[in-house]
Image (cartoon, rainbow over all chains, first blue to last red; front, top):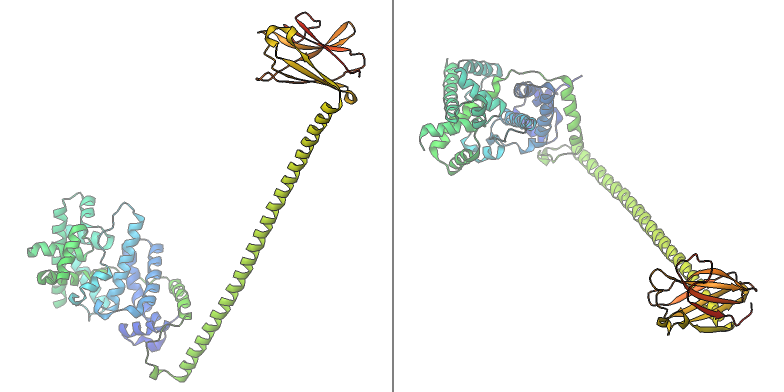
Amino acid sequence: MTPEAPKEFSSLTDEALFQEMASGQTGAFSVIYDRYSPQLYGLALKILQNQSLAEDVIQDIFVNIWKKAGAYDRSRGTPIAWMTILCRNRCIDMLRRQDKNRRRSAILDEDVLQVIADERAENPLENASFSEMRGVIKRAMENLPEEQRQAIEMAYFKGFSQSEIAGELNLPLGTVKTRMRLGMQKLKDLITKKWDQ
Amino acid sequence: MDQEKLKELAAAYCLGALDGDEKRLFEELLQKGDPLARQVYREMQETASLLPYAAEPVPPPAYLKENILQRIGAETARPKTPIRNLAETSESAIFENLQNLVWRWKRLAWGITFASVLLLAGLSWYFLEREKQIFAEKNQKITEMQTRLEDFEITLREKDRLLQLVKAYENAIFALNRLGSNLQNANVKVVIVPDQNKAVFIGSDIVPPPPGKVYLLWKLQGASPINAGVWQTDAQGNLVYEVGDITDDITDFAVTIESGETAQSLTGPTSPIELHVKI
């Protein structure tokens, strides 16, 4: 039987829960887990396409979150943004370990994010619910031209570098770069437009 | 760098697809505070940060949470540094913290004691084993030396016996010049050992026999000579040759040069050796 999250923590914000975790409150951890594990597990499954590996990643990152809760810095983004980066990086690392022929390409590492922390973008959907956000993103992705969506998904969800995508799709590198730029630009426009409606 | 190129770099960077020189270049621009680079990065990052929500949420299996809680349970057992203000901490919490502290110190003390006992036992065993090994090695050396001493004593006794033989029994020196002109300087001493019924021939300056020939020793028993074997000399022409079965009816010896070592009668040049001691 899964332990229930204590009620006294349920009403706390993510930042407050992280502070409680830093002082050793497993109840606060339980609330964070219940709130975000479906989102992170879904992301891990989408990237890894393997239930067992996704479970390993979720275990590792939540143990990591517990250990590093005290080091969490609001300037790096919201707790869920930070946890999402941890999850995505861990999944891409795992994919690369499984395919040793693939070279290590850029991962948004935490050190670089710290350097540019003051440039951190505000999430335009920060105040939206998960389901609202998901709906907007999903529709925006569906409205992207197929080749642009493919380039974005191969990079973000499969961890391919631009040159690897060019190789996989047998395309000139310049074409991949253009598709990625146009895709991200269009995605931004679509999200903004949908949300404004 | 124009805006389109910057957008290209930023898009790839935020998707984690930029690598090598281009990644370093873009990070340098951000770190230097290039305003256009920062603006473009902000826009692209804003979009990229929403991509994870494209994944459908899936509730993980229930056992996963239990596993994770078990793993972090070990961490919880070690109290973390509380971030609460001490003034806000209740008396019971202080008491609990003190208890934890005492328990940790006790655990540490027991740990150190146990480790020390183990270390002492290990060191004692090591030194004991080493002493045993040294003792066994010394014992072996003593045994080897005793064996060598016994061998030496045997050799010494044998040499002493031969010396006594030479001194005790009458012996004579014989020339071998009758065997050939090249044996003018050769001579042979005969030592008779009566209690063992044997004779020992000790010679020097004996040149090798002609090619295909051997020096053959004969025991003379009346008119019947008995083949007593071939004299083998060393490279310097020295001879030590021992003959047994010297019975009373052996009256003399003779040396001849023969074609083969199995000759049954004296055919070649002969040098008689007379016995001066009756056995």
